[in-house]
Each structure stands twice: as C-alpha cells, then as structure tokens.
Image 1 (tube, rainbow, N blue to C red):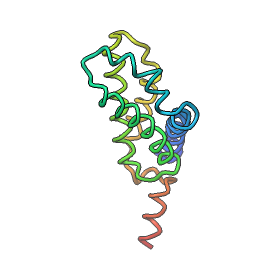
Image 2: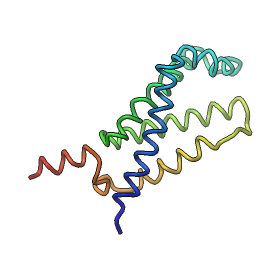
Image 3: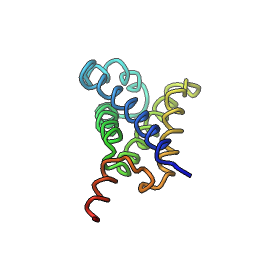
Image 4: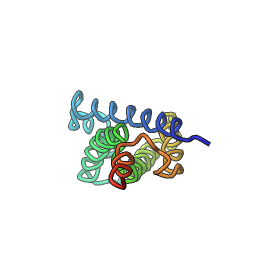
Length: 138
C-alpha cells in the first residue's frame, strides 16, 4: 500500500494549520496579546502566572516552529512530540475553565497527528529529512 501521498497530505495540512496559527499569534497578535486576551481567564485557577505566560509562549512559538518543520519535513519525530504536548496542554487548560468545551480544533489536529505518528518515518518519502538521509546513504 502506498502511504507516501496520504502521509504527505496529512503532514502538510497539519503543518500549514499550525504554522498559520503560530504566525498569527506571534506576528499578527503578538504573544503578549495572546496572553492578555486568552490566558488571563486562567489566572482564576490554581495555575501560577509564570506558568501561564510560559504556556502562552510555548504554545504560540511551538505551533509556529513545529508547523514549519512539518511543512518542510524536518525533525518530524521531535515536532510530533511537541505538538502532542501542545494539544495536551490546550485540552487540559480548556477543561480547567469549562469542563464542556468545543473540541473541534483539538480533535481534528489530534486525528492528523495520531495518523502521522503511526506511519513509520521512512514511509514519508517526501520529507526533507528522509530525502537527506537517503542521499547520504548513496
């Protein structure tokens, strides 16, 4: 079975979604505005402010950087793990404020991520790190 094209599509789609979200948070809104408009509500919880600020920066830059890495097909395994951490953090945070919240964004990204994590890295033939590795073996 050829998994190269579905894997490429899934990696590019997830990468573009994360890249554009991270780009918007870092360059359009600014992470301090992301914190003030999205994370301030969490100050009402038991989470300390320094952890909330770290999380705002980690998730914003993580989406930007990991999205770019997925589009390029570089450091995929590491990017998958960071994205998984981001999705877990987001899910926990939203659940803290409202036990019943709209999961449509997290769920779709999670499905693509799980699929990508299940595909062996060498089956993603159109990733840059795969191309570099195969060229160095020649």
